[in-house]
Image 1 (spheres, rainbow, N blue to C red):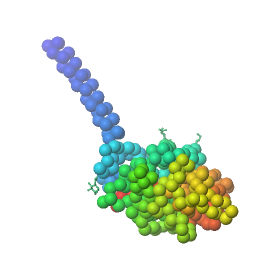
Image 2 (cartoon, protein in one colour):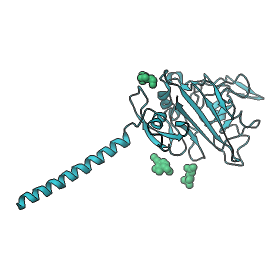
Image 3 (cartoon, rainbow, N blue to C red):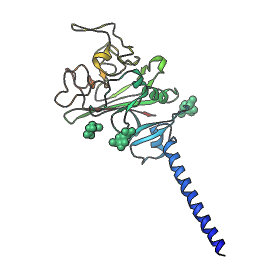
Length: 266
Ligand SMILES: *[C@@H]1O[C@H](CO)[C@@H](O)[C@H](O)[C@H]1NC(C)=O
Ligand SMILES: *[C@@H]1O[C@H](CO)[C@@H](O)[C@H](O)[C@H]1NC(C)=O
Ligand SMILES: *[C@@H]1O[C@H](CO)[C@@H](O)[C@H](O)[C@H]1NC(C)=O
């Protein structure tokens, strides 16, 4: 009798141990396995889901990766750029812009490769939104329908459709001839811009990424450039490198206090 009781107790102990192991394994698996194809799908499945880092696996793609999802009333947005200060340098080369950098809960660049993987399925449509914050407490936005990037071979060429917003269409430019739609991505070590050279007054410029900073879909060089050097309040006007959206606050180059770029599938 005593032996049987001991055995039962032993069995109970072992099964409790096994149960706790399997709960632990399940938790680990949940944290690492994809929670949706993108933030929009996660939001649709769980409308009360809060903003934060999620694991996604885009449709038709073999790998999964982490992204920051900005959950808003109008949908779940996959964030691919966030600037709010000078802690994370955006003065980086091609490999960094391709693969991403920074901490996704703070300032970061998701990586061109991942944005391409998200937007490569031609039967899906994506809206890209740019949010801007100025140094006086104001905000503005620009939204583009039919956003998509081409593959690395095409140097992640930018495609944007119809613009709406109140920050102006800086991607198409503050004046004709500098449209960035259809341009490939440039960094200091990968020059795909439209300057050979560009003449700005008495300055001849051959590489936009050198003066405007960071990496971008530079044309000649264009009015949008949100990956340049971050400037603090009081020192935010007049720099060639900054967080520029020149249709928003002309005429002197105004560097935004913060910016965010993100996409949502429709
Ligand atoms: C592309 O997206 C459509 C619509 O969501 C989906 O039905 C199709 O399976 C996707 N194609 C691939 C290759 O993932
Ligand atoms: C930047 O770094 C400083 C010092 O490490 C820290 O105190 C501050 O909170 C950081 N700011 C952001 C926005 O990450
Ligand atoms: C990212 O930032 C968050 C918030 O400050 C912090 O808790 C986390 O440890 C950071 N992650 C990495 C990988 O540094």
